[in-house]
Length: 457
Image 1 (cartoon, rainbow, N blue to C red):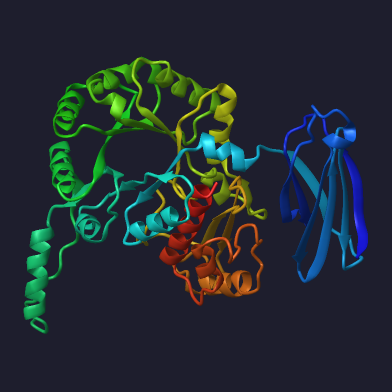
Image 2 (image 1 turned 135 degrees about the vertical axis):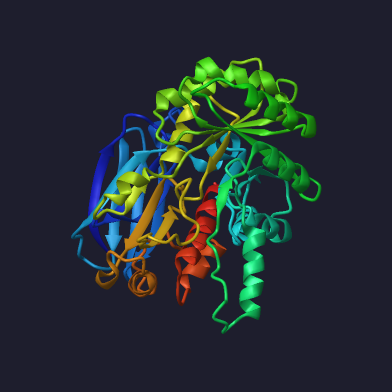
């Protein structure tokens, strides 16, 4: 092998450090260097040495490292003499093996219900090294029967707060029967469109009670602290408290939080110590996050706190051109809580997608062929591949774009192994060997991969 790079990097803080080898700014290898022992009696005893071997684009590499009180010295050797576009970077980090195990005791994947929801959760559970407590969000009443028949059997949070009910379902079914009988008749009636309205709180409560008879759930109460609890909130919470010993409060809006949150907590005081409160900090500044969490931790109540956030700023990604790699702002925000001594809280996300991302095609949409893949080593970054071939631009079609994504990226190994490694999990194996993809299939596989990655931390 030939030496192609060598240097000494000065280090002023002796934390465990990630070292990365990059090709054209994309990471092709990453690993953790253990910090030197600054309490050692001699500099040589403080020193940490490691050698890593890896292959990229059929070229073998050997990375030799020495981490001591002076800094990090490295030598990169290669079976090829060419060092063009190869660089090395380092960043201080926390050793996941000791950090996550104590700081992230439970992971809550938040999933809008589809026919794949139970399979996604079960895949995550099968590879998890922590407790998994999912939140399933059902938006359409037609999904409830499928959820009950093919749903998730273990204890979970269930949110029906924004459920929509098809009010003309019986009438539509009767018209469908007539259309079958009168096929070919000039008087055959047209099938009317679906007419949805929001479920009332009474209907939602009745459904929670009905579902709890056969499924182990913790029901959800959504609140927005822009306004204090009103008489409708009081009646609903009292009814919920009469029927359930535990609930999860899902805080969706946090304006006037410090002023109004107690008006809700007081209603639930008798069951709050056995309940949960989840904060969805999408588009919320860090200082506000800390203030909100401190308010609850310093209160007389002790619900289990869950920190939730979208994986990336998806609005900015939609305008982004070029670089597909983004910080996982949900995980980094959660990790920063430790510096504020905010601990023993759970972590939640939407498995690498937006909270309200579409789960099926909606007329008028102009979707792209996409993959959302979290870094499978430490989940601190997400790679988003977004493809729209020229002939499908401006349309709702994605078939040719999906074919291009499979042929040019997956089959040709053009997705960084840190994001798609067939040895990482069953989702990666399936995606790596995929023959064809649809929008729903790609999302389902990516959500499994992303959830498994977090669950394995």
